[in-house]
Image (cartoon, rainbow, N blue to C red; front, side, top):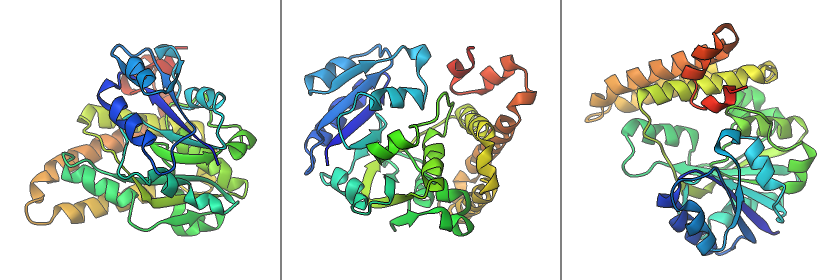
Length: 302
């Protein structure tokens, strides 16, 4: 199997050299690394070219979470498309091998790896990564909806591998889409009878340090994307999983020395909840306000 790495980038100079070098030095090196750049203002493109990456460009205003990835995939020569983000760093030199290992099962359409919070991440972020990306690998099919609920469709293209033939069969990522292109893609595959694999052995370092306003805007966009794809609600709703996460975070932060994070956790939870609920109601909000609430504001330019 030939592997094509696809990396959307924007001002990624701090990450790109280390990331591409680590991918080049894998025990299973990729056939190609495609960097699809959105008019970076730093030396992202120069650093990537120096390391042998193929460069594609899109206008920053034209970036779309689904469409830009589809554009890059249309240029890929590999049988397996490995989608990553610029700030995800493989933990080991067997990352690609571990990520594509589930494809020994022909019914596996896609696989995603484990995300481990960076050492500087807050306890809230560390716990959230552990909650969403546990130690145990699993295979998810439509039969698991009663067991996992919305988590059946959980899938992250921060570090993921997709069979190209299935990608073409289901029409790639949805576009245009403001967020959640990965989960919607996984749901389409599962509903066609395929399975999605979580490969916990394929780990990357990846975490965020968002301000409260960014938490609100990010979850607003998630709410918008789910409302635009509300057919998924007939199978499962995300509210139950969100409540389970909140309870797990609360238990975690009640430990000695961690309770000082409780005020921040409360503020983050409120920001996320309000953002998500308002995103679900975006059709009743004036477009000018919607743009202010959104993290991906260019999505609303038309």
